[in-house]
Length: 195
Image (cartoon, rainbow, N blue to C red; front, side, top):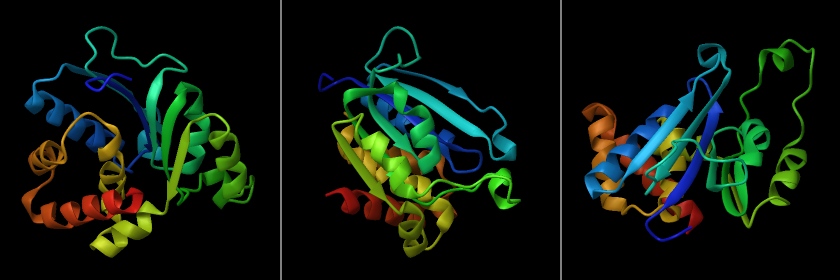
């Protein structure tokens, strides 16, 4: 990855805020005058299905990150991290929220959610660095569990070629004013968690 470029794959399940993260990063890149492109797949997002977003900062061609080409995999849910780790470069970084969102097959007893170590171990073997955190707990500390995605955005900030000020400026454009302070606190907690 060159200092001005970064290929990100952001994954989670419907309702976790994958699209907000990509929107904030895209806005920050535009404010910075950097080329940015992205593509997203919602799938059955409204029913808790996978949501995947490709965001490429400094890219002037395809919005899709090639398999094995992502500099960063940002996962809001651990099972989704494992499902999409094939996008990550061996030199890449994975940031993962360790709080699972249990699929209906697990909640109704037809399947078991794997233990966290069985999810993280194969991910760790495929990357340069794995950072796992309970971003949901940090968001609760910030005042709202719904800001878990912004905790993860704060954790991501040091791994993308955009300044914290620009990311926060873009966040203020994307989040309603009444939720902005809680989101800024969530961002700060995520940033502090990886420092």
